[in-house]
Amino acid sequence: MRDVAIVSTAQMTNVRREQRRNEVEMLMPVVQEAVKRSGIPKGDIGFTCSGSCDYLAGQPFAFVSALDAIGAWPPISESHVEMDGAWALYEAWVKIQTGQADSALVYSFGKSSMGDVPDVLNLQLDPYYLSPLGIDSISLAALQARAFLEKTQYTERDLAKVAVRSRKSAKDNPNAQLAGDFDLEKLLAEPYLVSPLRVHDCAPISDGAVAVVLAADDTARNACERPAWITGIDHRIEPHQPGVRDLSESPSTALAGAKAGVASGGIEVAELYAPFTHQELILRDALGLDASTSINPSGGALAANAIMVAGLTRIAEVANRIQWGSIGRGLAHATSGPCLQQNLVCVLEAK
Amino acid sequence: MASGDGGLLSASHIVEYPYRRSTGPVMGRFFAALRDRRFEGVKTARGRVLVPPTEYDPQTGEAADEMVPVGPGGVVTTWAWVSHPRAKHPLNHPFAWALIQLDGADTAMLHAVDTGVESAMQTGMRVTPRWRAQTVGSINDVACFEPEGTS
Image 1 (tube, rainbow over the protein chains, first blue to last red):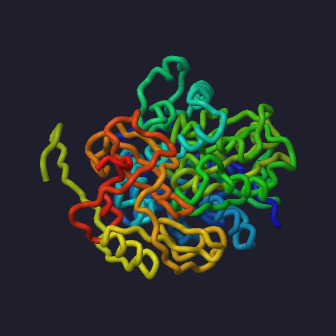
Image 2 (image 1 turned 60 degrees about the vertical axis):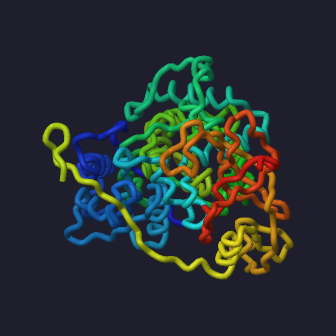
Image 3 (image 1 turned 90 degrees about the vertical axis):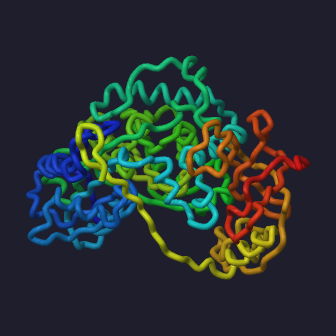
Protein backbone atom coordinates (compact mmCIF):
# COMPACT_ATOMS: atom_id res chain seq x y z
CA MET A 1 0.00 0.00 0.00
CA ARG A 2 1.15 3.53 -0.74
CA ASP A 3 1.25 6.05 2.09
CA VAL A 4 -1.39 8.66 1.32
CA ALA A 5 -1.95 11.86 3.29
CA ILE A 6 -4.14 14.93 3.36
CA VAL A 7 -1.78 17.85 2.77
CA SER A 8 -4.24 20.75 2.71
CA THR A 9 -7.90 21.63 3.22
CA ALA A 10 -10.19 24.63 2.77
CA GLN A 11 -13.82 25.32 3.64
CA MET A 12 -16.46 27.86 2.86
CA THR A 13 -18.11 29.40 5.91
CA ASN A 14 -21.47 27.63 6.09
CA VAL A 15 -24.56 29.80 5.81
CA ARG A 16 -28.30 29.13 5.90
CA ARG A 17 -28.76 30.64 2.47
CA GLU A 18 -26.09 31.79 0.03
CA GLN A 19 -27.97 34.58 -1.71
CA ARG A 20 -25.53 35.91 -4.26
CA ARG A 21 -23.19 33.19 -5.43
CA ASN A 22 -23.95 30.08 -7.49
CA GLU A 23 -22.19 26.77 -6.85
CA VAL A 24 -19.23 27.58 -9.09
CA GLU A 25 -18.73 30.89 -7.32
CA MET A 26 -18.99 29.17 -3.92
CA LEU A 27 -16.43 26.55 -4.90
CA MET A 28 -13.81 28.59 -6.71
CA PRO A 29 -12.18 30.32 -3.70
CA VAL A 30 -12.32 27.08 -1.67
CA VAL A 31 -10.61 25.02 -4.36
CA GLN A 32 -8.02 27.72 -5.02
CA GLU A 33 -7.19 27.99 -1.34
CA ALA A 34 -6.79 24.22 -0.88
CA VAL A 35 -4.55 23.92 -3.95
CA LYS A 36 -2.46 26.93 -2.93
CA ARG A 37 -1.96 25.59 0.60
CA SER A 38 -0.85 22.23 -0.76
CA GLY A 39 2.04 23.88 -2.60
CA ILE A 40 1.49 21.41 -5.45
CA PRO A 41 1.22 23.22 -8.81
CA LYS A 42 -2.36 22.81 -10.01
CA GLY A 43 -1.22 21.27 -13.29
CA ASP A 44 0.65 18.56 -11.37
CA ILE A 45 -2.41 17.29 -9.51
CA GLY A 46 -3.08 13.88 -11.04
CA PHE A 47 -6.76 13.32 -10.29
CA THR A 48 -9.84 15.32 -9.38
CA CYS A 49 -12.93 13.84 -7.74
CA SER A 50 -16.08 15.52 -6.41
CA GLY A 51 -19.24 14.68 -4.50
CA SER A 52 -22.57 16.47 -4.84
CA CYS A 53 -26.30 15.89 -5.27
CA ASP A 54 -27.99 16.82 -8.56
CA TYR A 55 -31.39 16.76 -6.86
CA LEU A 56 -30.51 19.95 -4.96
CA ALA A 57 -30.28 21.91 -8.21
CA GLY A 58 -33.01 19.78 -9.79
CA GLN A 59 -30.92 19.33 -12.91
CA PRO A 60 -29.37 16.14 -14.27
CA PHE A 61 -25.58 16.40 -14.54
CA ALA A 62 -25.60 19.62 -12.49
CA PHE A 63 -22.23 18.55 -11.11
CA VAL A 64 -20.59 18.99 -14.53
CA SER A 65 -21.00 22.76 -14.39
CA ALA A 66 -19.01 22.79 -11.14
CA LEU A 67 -15.95 21.93 -13.22
CA ASP A 68 -15.93 25.59 -14.21
CA ALA A 69 -14.53 26.17 -10.72
CA ILE A 70 -11.61 23.81 -11.39
CA GLY A 71 -10.65 24.49 -14.97
CA ALA A 72 -10.70 21.38 -17.11
CA TRP A 73 -8.46 22.57 -19.95
CA PRO A 74 -6.00 21.15 -20.81
CA PRO A 75 -7.98 17.95 -20.12
CA ILE A 76 -7.81 16.55 -16.57
CA SER A 77 -8.50 13.10 -15.16
CA GLU A 78 -11.75 13.62 -13.29
CA SER A 79 -14.61 11.73 -11.62
CA HIS A 80 -17.72 12.41 -9.57
CA VAL A 81 -19.84 10.54 -7.01
CA GLU A 82 -23.49 11.34 -6.34
CA MET A 83 -22.58 11.04 -2.69
CA ASP A 84 -20.93 12.92 0.12
CA GLY A 85 -17.42 14.12 -0.72
CA ALA A 86 -16.05 11.61 1.81
CA TRP A 87 -16.74 8.91 -0.79
CA ALA A 88 -15.08 11.06 -3.47
CA LEU A 89 -12.04 11.09 -1.19
CA TYR A 90 -12.27 7.28 -0.97
CA GLU A 91 -12.27 7.05 -4.77
CA ALA A 92 -9.27 9.37 -4.97
CA TRP A 93 -7.45 7.29 -2.34
CA VAL A 94 -8.09 4.15 -4.43
CA LYS A 95 -6.91 5.95 -7.58
CA ILE A 96 -3.65 6.89 -5.85
CA GLN A 97 -3.25 3.31 -4.57
CA THR A 98 -3.44 2.04 -8.15
CA GLY A 99 -0.46 4.22 -9.04
CA GLN A 100 -2.47 6.17 -11.61
CA ALA A 101 -1.93 9.39 -9.68
CA ASP A 102 0.40 10.73 -6.99
CA SER A 103 -1.94 13.50 -5.84
CA ALA A 104 -5.62 14.35 -6.02
CA LEU A 105 -8.00 17.24 -5.48
CA VAL A 106 -11.25 16.25 -3.76
CA TYR A 107 -14.11 18.67 -3.32
CA SER A 108 -17.79 18.78 -2.60
CA PHE A 109 -20.47 21.43 -2.57
CA GLY A 110 -24.06 21.63 -1.44
CA LYS A 111 -26.41 24.52 -1.96
CA SER A 112 -29.04 22.89 0.21
CA SER A 113 -31.15 26.05 0.40
CA MET A 114 -32.35 25.64 -3.19
CA GLY A 115 -34.85 22.95 -2.24
CA ASP A 116 -36.70 21.47 0.70
CA VAL A 117 -34.01 19.18 2.09
CA PRO A 118 -36.27 16.75 4.05
CA ASP A 119 -38.35 16.20 0.87
CA VAL A 120 -35.35 16.12 -1.47
CA LEU A 121 -33.84 13.33 0.64
CA ASN A 122 -37.03 11.31 0.09
CA LEU A 123 -35.76 10.84 -3.47
CA GLN A 124 -32.81 8.72 -2.26
CA LEU A 125 -35.29 6.09 -1.05
CA ASP A 126 -36.39 3.09 -3.07
CA PRO A 127 -39.17 4.03 -5.54
CA TYR A 128 -41.50 1.14 -4.61
CA TYR A 129 -41.89 0.72 -0.85
CA LEU A 130 -40.57 3.94 0.70
CA SER A 131 -40.47 6.99 -1.56
CA PRO A 132 -44.16 6.82 -2.70
CA LEU A 133 -45.25 7.13 0.95
CA GLY A 134 -43.86 10.66 0.97
CA ILE A 135 -41.73 10.15 4.08
CA ASP A 136 -39.08 12.81 4.75
CA SER A 137 -35.61 12.51 6.29
CA ILE A 138 -36.60 13.91 9.70
CA SER A 139 -39.44 11.40 10.10
CA LEU A 140 -37.13 8.51 9.21
CA ALA A 141 -34.59 9.73 11.77
CA ALA A 142 -37.37 10.03 14.37
CA LEU A 143 -38.32 6.36 13.83
CA GLN A 144 -34.69 5.50 14.52
CA ALA A 145 -34.52 7.80 17.55
CA ARG A 146 -37.48 6.10 19.23
CA ALA A 147 -36.09 2.62 18.51
CA PHE A 148 -32.80 3.81 20.05
CA LEU A 149 -34.37 5.41 23.13
CA GLU A 150 -36.60 2.39 23.81
CA LYS A 151 -33.85 -0.22 23.39
CA THR A 152 -31.10 1.56 25.34
CA GLN A 153 -30.71 3.47 28.61
CA TYR A 154 -30.36 6.82 26.80
CA THR A 155 -32.99 9.54 27.30
CA GLU A 156 -34.18 12.65 25.47
CA ARG A 157 -31.99 14.58 27.94
CA ASP A 158 -28.93 12.73 26.61
CA LEU A 159 -29.91 13.79 23.08
CA ALA A 160 -30.27 17.43 24.14
CA LYS A 161 -26.85 17.29 25.81
CA VAL A 162 -25.34 16.35 22.45
CA ALA A 163 -26.97 19.42 20.88
CA VAL A 164 -25.78 21.76 23.67
CA ARG A 165 -22.20 20.45 23.58
CA SER A 166 -22.01 20.55 19.75
CA ARG A 167 -23.21 24.13 19.43
CA LYS A 168 -20.94 25.25 22.27
CA SER A 169 -17.94 23.65 20.54
CA ALA A 170 -18.96 25.33 17.30
CA LYS A 171 -18.24 28.72 18.87
CA ASP A 172 -14.54 27.99 18.17
CA ASN A 173 -15.22 27.02 14.54
CA PRO A 174 -15.22 30.03 12.20
CA ASN A 175 -16.92 27.93 9.48
CA ALA A 176 -19.87 26.88 11.65
CA GLN A 177 -23.36 28.16 10.97
CA LEU A 178 -25.15 27.38 14.23
CA ALA A 179 -23.12 28.07 17.38
CA GLY A 180 -23.84 29.37 20.85
CA ASP A 181 -24.72 28.59 24.43
CA PHE A 182 -28.07 26.88 24.83
CA ASP A 183 -29.87 26.03 28.06
CA LEU A 184 -30.58 22.31 28.41
CA GLU A 185 -33.83 22.74 30.33
CA LYS A 186 -35.16 25.30 27.86
CA LEU A 187 -34.40 22.98 24.95
CA LEU A 188 -36.23 20.10 26.64
CA ALA A 189 -39.25 22.36 27.19
CA GLU A 190 -39.55 22.94 23.42
CA PRO A 191 -42.28 21.10 21.50
CA TYR A 192 -41.44 18.12 19.32
CA LEU A 193 -40.71 18.61 15.63
CA VAL A 194 -41.38 14.95 14.82
CA SER A 195 -41.60 13.14 18.15
CA PRO A 196 -39.28 12.07 19.77
CA LEU A 197 -37.07 14.63 17.96
CA ARG A 198 -37.11 18.36 18.69
CA VAL A 199 -35.66 21.09 16.51
CA HIS A 200 -32.39 21.07 18.47
CA ASP A 201 -31.95 17.34 17.68
CA CYS A 202 -31.74 18.10 13.96
CA ALA A 203 -28.91 19.55 11.89
CA PRO A 204 -29.48 22.99 10.36
CA ILE A 205 -29.91 23.43 6.61
CA SER A 206 -26.66 24.81 5.23
CA ASP A 207 -25.00 25.99 2.05
CA GLY A 208 -21.32 25.13 1.98
CA ALA A 209 -18.30 23.73 0.18
CA VAL A 210 -15.06 21.98 1.12
CA ALA A 211 -11.89 20.93 -0.70
CA VAL A 212 -9.01 18.64 0.25
CA VAL A 213 -5.72 17.80 -1.47
CA LEU A 214 -4.32 14.27 -1.12
CA ALA A 215 -0.77 13.24 -1.95
CA ALA A 216 1.27 10.04 -1.77
CA ASP A 217 4.67 9.28 -0.27
CA ASP A 218 7.33 11.93 -0.95
CA THR A 219 4.86 14.18 -2.76
CA ALA A 220 3.06 14.50 0.58
CA ARG A 221 6.28 14.84 2.61
CA ASN A 222 7.50 17.62 0.32
CA ALA A 223 4.14 19.38 0.28
CA CYS A 224 3.64 19.78 3.98
CA GLU A 225 5.48 19.70 7.27
CA ARG A 226 2.95 17.51 9.04
CA PRO A 227 0.80 15.52 6.60
CA ALA A 228 -2.31 13.83 8.00
CA TRP A 229 -1.66 10.25 6.90
CA ILE A 230 -4.64 8.05 6.10
CA THR A 231 -3.72 4.88 7.99
CA GLY A 232 -7.11 3.25 7.53
CA ILE A 233 -10.22 3.92 5.46
CA ASP A 234 -13.23 1.65 4.94
CA HIS A 235 -16.92 1.93 4.19
CA ARG A 236 -19.76 -0.53 4.71
CA ILE A 237 -23.43 -0.57 3.83
CA GLU A 238 -26.56 -2.05 5.43
CA PRO A 239 -29.84 -3.13 3.79
CA HIS A 240 -31.88 -0.26 2.39
CA GLN A 241 -35.17 -1.16 4.06
CA PRO A 242 -35.22 0.34 7.56
CA GLY A 243 -37.50 -2.46 8.83
CA VAL A 244 -34.86 -5.10 8.10
CA ARG A 245 -32.30 -3.56 10.45
CA ASP A 246 -32.01 -2.95 14.18
CA LEU A 247 -32.07 0.84 13.95
CA SER A 248 -30.73 1.27 17.49
CA GLU A 249 -27.22 0.21 16.49
CA SER A 250 -24.83 0.62 13.57
CA PRO A 251 -23.06 -2.65 12.68
CA SER A 252 -21.74 -1.16 9.42
CA THR A 253 -19.95 1.60 11.36
CA ALA A 254 -18.53 -0.96 13.79
CA LEU A 255 -17.25 -3.08 10.88
CA ALA A 256 -15.82 -0.10 8.97
CA GLY A 257 -14.14 1.07 12.19
CA ALA A 258 -12.59 -2.36 12.78
CA LYS A 259 -11.34 -2.59 9.18
CA ALA A 260 -9.91 0.94 9.39
CA GLY A 261 -7.95 -0.03 12.51
CA VAL A 262 -9.66 2.34 14.95
CA ALA A 263 -8.81 0.14 17.95
CA SER A 264 -5.09 -0.13 17.19
CA GLY A 265 -4.35 3.14 19.01
CA GLY A 266 -5.88 5.95 21.00
CA ILE A 267 -8.37 8.27 19.31
CA GLU A 268 -7.83 11.85 20.47
CA VAL A 269 -10.50 13.41 18.28
CA ALA A 270 -13.47 11.84 16.50
CA GLU A 271 -15.44 13.88 13.99
CA LEU A 272 -18.71 12.00 13.47
CA TYR A 273 -21.22 12.90 10.76
CA ALA A 274 -24.39 12.69 12.87
CA PRO A 275 -27.07 15.01 11.48
CA PHE A 276 -29.35 13.97 14.36
CA THR A 277 -28.34 13.93 18.03
CA HIS A 278 -29.20 10.26 18.69
CA GLN A 279 -27.02 9.22 15.75
CA GLU A 280 -23.90 10.57 17.50
CA LEU A 281 -24.62 8.28 20.46
CA ILE A 282 -25.18 5.27 18.16
CA LEU A 283 -21.90 6.00 16.35
CA ARG A 284 -19.91 6.50 19.57
CA ASP A 285 -21.03 3.10 20.81
CA ALA A 286 -20.43 1.42 17.43
CA LEU A 287 -16.85 2.77 17.37
CA GLY A 288 -16.19 2.00 21.04
CA LEU A 289 -15.31 5.62 21.85
CA ASP A 290 -15.12 6.63 25.51
CA ALA A 291 -14.55 9.83 27.49
CA SER A 292 -10.89 9.94 26.43
CA THR A 293 -11.96 10.99 22.90
CA SER A 294 -13.04 14.54 22.11
CA ILE A 295 -16.20 14.21 19.97
CA ASN A 296 -16.89 16.77 17.25
CA PRO A 297 -14.77 19.69 18.50
CA SER A 298 -15.87 21.49 15.30
CA GLY A 299 -19.51 21.26 16.36
CA GLY A 300 -20.14 18.53 13.80
CA ALA A 301 -23.14 18.36 11.50
CA LEU A 302 -25.35 19.87 14.20
CA ALA A 303 -23.46 23.13 13.61
CA ALA A 304 -23.43 22.99 9.79
CA ASN A 305 -24.83 20.37 7.44
CA ALA A 306 -24.38 21.27 3.78
CA ILE A 307 -25.65 18.23 1.88
CA MET A 308 -22.79 16.10 0.47
CA VAL A 309 -20.26 18.41 2.19
CA ALA A 310 -20.57 17.58 5.88
CA GLY A 311 -18.88 14.15 5.64
CA LEU A 312 -15.78 15.36 3.80
CA THR A 313 -15.71 18.29 6.24
CA ARG A 314 -15.37 15.81 9.12
CA ILE A 315 -12.23 14.41 7.44
CA ALA A 316 -10.89 17.93 6.84
CA GLU A 317 -11.48 18.90 10.49
CA VAL A 318 -9.43 15.94 11.77
CA ALA A 319 -6.71 16.53 9.16
CA ASN A 320 -6.47 20.20 10.21
CA ARG A 321 -5.89 19.23 13.84
CA ILE A 322 -3.09 16.86 12.85
CA GLN A 323 -1.50 19.52 10.62
CA TRP A 324 -1.75 22.14 13.39
CA GLY A 325 0.02 19.70 15.71
CA SER A 326 -2.79 19.64 18.23
CA ILE A 327 -3.40 15.88 17.92
CA GLY A 328 -1.48 12.84 16.70
CA ARG A 329 -4.34 10.46 15.84
CA GLY A 330 -8.01 10.91 15.11
CA LEU A 331 -10.90 9.45 13.21
CA ALA A 332 -13.46 10.90 10.85
CA HIS A 333 -16.79 9.34 9.96
CA ALA A 334 -19.26 10.03 7.15
CA THR A 335 -22.73 8.66 6.57
CA SER A 336 -25.09 8.33 3.62
CA GLY A 337 -28.65 7.12 3.20
CA PRO A 338 -31.52 7.01 5.69
CA CYS A 339 -30.91 6.17 9.35
CA LEU A 340 -27.12 5.74 9.05
CA GLN A 341 -27.50 3.18 6.27
CA GLN A 342 -23.96 3.50 4.89
CA ASN A 343 -20.93 4.53 6.87
CA LEU A 344 -17.31 5.42 6.15
CA VAL A 345 -14.54 5.54 8.74
CA CYS A 346 -11.17 7.16 8.10
CA VAL A 347 -8.27 7.04 10.59
CA LEU A 348 -5.73 9.86 10.26
CA GLU A 349 -2.34 10.00 11.95
CA ALA A 350 0.80 12.11 12.15
CA LYS A 351 3.92 10.01 11.66
CA MET B 1 -42.67 33.99 -16.34
CA ALA B 2 -43.92 36.14 -13.56
CA SER B 3 -42.31 39.21 -12.09
CA GLY B 4 -41.64 38.70 -8.40
CA ASP B 5 -40.45 41.06 -5.68
CA GLY B 6 -37.90 43.58 -6.88
CA GLY B 7 -38.73 42.95 -10.53
CA LEU B 8 -36.93 39.57 -10.60
CA LEU B 9 -38.25 37.13 -13.15
CA SER B 10 -39.28 33.77 -11.76
CA ALA B 11 -40.69 30.62 -13.31
CA SER B 12 -41.81 27.32 -11.86
CA HIS B 13 -39.55 24.37 -12.61
CA ILE B 14 -41.01 20.89 -12.22
CA VAL B 15 -38.51 18.03 -12.10
CA GLU B 16 -39.99 14.88 -13.59
CA TYR B 17 -38.58 11.46 -14.33
CA PRO B 18 -41.38 9.93 -16.41
CA TYR B 19 -40.00 6.40 -16.48
CA ARG B 20 -41.95 3.17 -16.18
CA ARG B 21 -40.31 0.48 -14.12
CA SER B 22 -40.77 -3.27 -14.06
CA THR B 23 -41.23 -4.47 -10.50
CA GLY B 24 -40.02 -8.02 -11.20
CA PRO B 25 -41.23 -11.41 -9.91
CA VAL B 26 -41.15 -10.75 -6.16
CA MET B 27 -42.18 -7.10 -5.76
CA GLY B 28 -44.64 -7.67 -8.59
CA ARG B 29 -46.36 -10.43 -6.57
CA PHE B 30 -46.45 -8.17 -3.49
CA PHE B 31 -48.09 -5.32 -5.40
CA ALA B 32 -50.54 -7.65 -7.17
CA ALA B 33 -51.59 -8.95 -3.74
CA LEU B 34 -52.05 -5.38 -2.47
CA ARG B 35 -54.40 -4.76 -5.37
CA ASP B 36 -56.46 -7.71 -4.01
CA ARG B 37 -56.21 -6.25 -0.48
CA ARG B 38 -53.82 -8.95 0.77
CA PHE B 39 -50.20 -8.98 1.96
CA GLU B 40 -47.55 -11.43 0.80
CA GLY B 41 -44.00 -11.82 2.01
CA VAL B 42 -41.05 -13.78 0.65
CA LYS B 43 -39.51 -16.70 2.52
CA THR B 44 -35.72 -16.94 2.43
CA ALA B 45 -33.69 -20.16 2.38
CA ARG B 46 -33.08 -19.60 6.11
CA GLY B 47 -36.84 -19.61 6.71
CA ARG B 48 -37.19 -15.89 7.45
CA VAL B 49 -40.19 -14.08 5.97
CA LEU B 50 -39.32 -10.64 4.56
CA VAL B 51 -42.04 -7.98 4.28
CA PRO B 52 -41.76 -5.90 2.19
CA PRO B 53 -40.24 -8.67 0.07
CA THR B 54 -36.99 -8.48 -1.90
CA GLU B 55 -35.58 -10.88 -4.48
CA TYR B 56 -32.66 -11.69 -2.21
CA ASP B 57 -31.92 -12.27 1.47
CA PRO B 58 -30.20 -9.04 2.54
CA GLN B 59 -28.00 -10.95 4.98
CA THR B 60 -26.74 -13.69 2.68
CA GLY B 61 -27.47 -12.40 -0.84
CA GLU B 62 -29.20 -15.71 -1.63
CA ALA B 63 -32.14 -15.61 -4.01
CA ALA B 64 -35.62 -15.74 -2.43
CA ASP B 65 -38.81 -16.42 -4.38
CA GLU B 66 -41.27 -18.42 -2.23
CA MET B 67 -44.20 -16.11 -1.53
CA VAL B 68 -46.24 -16.67 1.63
CA PRO B 69 -49.35 -14.89 2.94
CA VAL B 70 -48.84 -12.54 5.92
CA GLY B 71 -50.94 -10.09 7.95
CA PRO B 72 -53.24 -8.32 7.57
CA GLY B 73 -52.71 -7.32 11.23
CA GLY B 74 -49.36 -6.52 12.73
CA VAL B 75 -47.37 -4.96 15.55
CA VAL B 76 -45.73 -1.51 15.71
CA THR B 77 -41.98 -1.91 16.35
CA THR B 78 -41.12 1.82 16.38
CA TRP B 79 -42.96 5.03 15.53
CA ALA B 80 -42.65 8.80 15.14
CA TRP B 81 -45.42 11.31 15.67
CA VAL B 82 -46.01 13.98 13.04
CA SER B 83 -47.98 16.89 14.49
CA HIS B 84 -47.65 19.02 11.34
CA PRO B 85 -47.93 16.84 8.22
CA ARG B 86 -45.93 17.89 5.17
CA ALA B 87 -47.61 18.27 1.77
CA LYS B 88 -46.35 14.88 0.54
CA HIS B 89 -47.37 12.95 3.64
CA PRO B 90 -50.21 10.41 3.24
CA LEU B 91 -52.51 12.02 5.84
CA ASN B 92 -53.28 15.71 6.24
CA HIS B 93 -53.95 15.55 9.98
CA PRO B 94 -51.54 14.54 12.77
CA PHE B 95 -50.47 10.89 12.45
CA ALA B 96 -47.64 8.48 13.19
CA TRP B 97 -45.06 6.94 10.91
CA ALA B 98 -44.42 3.40 12.05
CA LEU B 99 -42.47 0.28 11.25
CA ILE B 100 -45.06 -2.51 11.33
CA GLN B 101 -44.22 -6.20 11.60
CA LEU B 102 -47.13 -8.02 9.98
CA ASP B 103 -48.28 -11.32 11.49
CA GLY B 104 -46.09 -14.07 10.06
CA ALA B 105 -43.31 -11.70 9.00
CA ASP B 106 -39.80 -11.41 10.48
CA THR B 107 -39.18 -7.84 9.27
CA ALA B 108 -41.16 -4.63 9.47
CA MET B 109 -42.65 -2.41 6.76
CA LEU B 110 -42.98 1.36 6.81
CA HIS B 111 -46.40 2.96 6.77
CA ALA B 112 -48.59 5.58 8.44
CA VAL B 113 -50.78 4.90 11.48
CA ASP B 114 -53.88 7.00 12.10
CA THR B 115 -54.71 7.23 15.81
CA GLY B 116 -55.79 10.86 15.95
CA VAL B 117 -53.70 11.57 19.04
CA GLU B 118 -50.10 10.78 19.98
CA SER B 119 -51.09 9.32 23.35
CA ALA B 120 -52.82 6.43 21.53
CA MET B 121 -49.52 5.36 19.96
CA GLN B 122 -47.32 2.76 21.62
CA THR B 123 -44.57 0.41 20.53
CA GLY B 124 -46.02 -3.09 20.55
CA MET B 125 -49.58 -1.99 19.74
CA ARG B 126 -51.56 -4.00 17.20
CA VAL B 127 -52.67 -2.34 13.98
CA THR B 128 -54.64 -3.31 10.90
CA PRO B 129 -54.71 -1.83 7.40
CA ARG B 130 -57.26 0.66 6.12
CA TRP B 131 -57.56 -0.04 2.38
CA ARG B 132 -58.37 2.55 -0.23
CA ALA B 133 -61.65 2.24 -2.09
CA GLN B 134 -59.69 1.82 -5.32
CA THR B 135 -56.54 -0.29 -5.33
CA VAL B 136 -54.00 -0.14 -8.16
CA GLY B 137 -51.05 -2.26 -6.98
CA SER B 138 -49.13 0.38 -5.03
CA ILE B 139 -47.86 0.74 -1.47
CA ASN B 140 -50.46 3.49 -1.22
CA ASP B 141 -53.29 0.97 -1.73
CA VAL B 142 -53.07 0.92 2.04
CA ALA B 143 -54.33 4.38 3.00
CA CYS B 144 -52.77 3.87 6.44
CA PHE B 145 -52.94 1.46 9.36
CA GLU B 146 -55.23 1.97 12.35
CA PRO B 147 -55.46 0.45 15.83
CA GLU B 148 -56.99 -3.03 15.73
CA GLY B 149 -60.70 -2.96 16.53
CA THR B 150 -61.23 0.60 15.29
CA SER B 151 -63.56 -0.28 12.44
